[in-house]
Length: 310
Ligand code: FAD
Image (spheres, protein in one colour):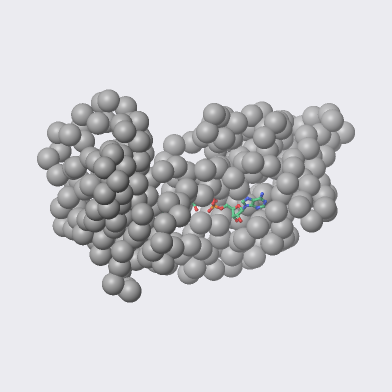
């Protein structure tokens, strides 16, 4: 059995594993896909101390760093259930889809999240070439250009306000007949002068020149008319879904499905900690995920030294 088993091999999981291994405790990582969302990222310019890098490059450094320690890395395995110990201090079980079970005295859940996609033609093709999901990450790439934000909820309008300070113009497209964002955010957006907000707009296609996005088409749901807009970037803000389906009913989650964590990364199960995008902590970023991985790992270590083995 492990002393600490990390579920998830993104930046949060990698950081948790390194912090645990450095304490000399028996550490494992089980992940679907080592690297997580970073594998899907093209340019990264906000990982502090590294001016610019690319997702796959950062993932290989992460993996090299983890492999420098005595950590068992199990990839291509998906966790399907977490079973709490019968008694605090006893072993916690992680069931895998393959049917295997892993046991550990403590866990760090770091299964991340995924951006909800529009599922329209061109979206996948131009991902990283104009189609973006993170305004904090990619906003500056569109300096002085025209962009759209898909989604008029809080994250969409926040993104529009954020981007409007950098880009030339922002068009917000909302499917519904009204924006769902808080009134105070809508007011802020209306005050900016370079944000248009269109409701009842169903995005139908991302248009490009084979290399980069050049525009999008949408259907005006009130008239049924098809319209197009020329632009350089499209920020999709229709939801970030935490990968917690396998924890429902066992670990306490927010209404949005995020794991509720304490300042030490504790969850509702003793000995089970969580870190990164899968938790209810705000601002989903690599640097934040790594910090919270360290926190959760140190929290788990504290738990281990205070909890007698039963
Ligand atoms: P993730 O990276 O999501 O990793 C989750 C891990 O858990 C993966 O290994 C996955 O395979 C595994 N997993 C999931 N479910 C299971 C399961 N049931 N069983 C086993 N394993 C499981 N942030 C920045 O700071 N700068 C950027 O420039 C930037 N650009 C981005 C661009 C894109 C396109 C995207 C999608 C995100 C970007 N982000 C960026 C956000 C950043 O990638 C995330 O905040 C960060 O990766 C979160 O790390 P994490 O370890 O919490 O989760």
